[in-house]
Length: 227
Image (cartoon, rainbow, N blue to C red; front, top):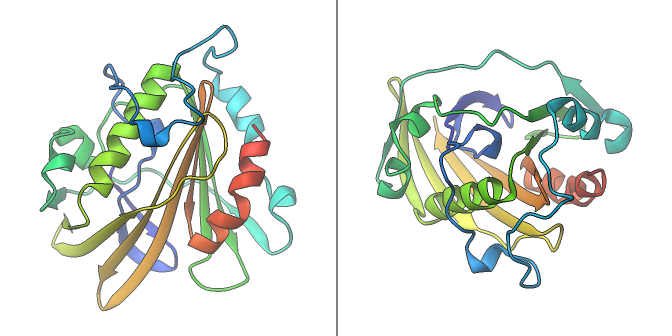
């Protein structure tokens, strides 16, 4: 689990407590929860589910022509590692101190992109792809989503700033082999911001789309089809 401190959804220095699964711990994963599986298909690998290299994932990312007019791809910023403490959510703490500070092990095969949309505020959308064995992707993603949605309200301290967090489990789209979705609300400095995060596993590739709920809903099917 990674805690990422970023400028997101039009707010400055807001804490975005997102997966992303490409930055989760690579220890042996637990099995996925039954609610996340598609049509009873077990999370087992077959000969077509070998992990893909990062170069292949990069080619599968959306680009501005896929998204339509008004979108611009942002350059990637260096990772930040501020002191982060999670209060009121033992399940997140149980994932380990490295997960709560952004220093967890990364899956080596990953690609990501960030886009801004000129059509309104709260207009960023993030895409991340990662690839590993089916068991690690399935179990790790399910474990983190379960931990986050298992704490409806908690608080995150970033340096000397307190951010109130609320999470709500959402119905995952009927795409790929497995899916997870959640709605996060950040409250800081008198501002509330909603962010949706949806993950879809298709074989040995995991897609994560995060950002404005409207933009996530608009582009998740297209992003999945690009796999």
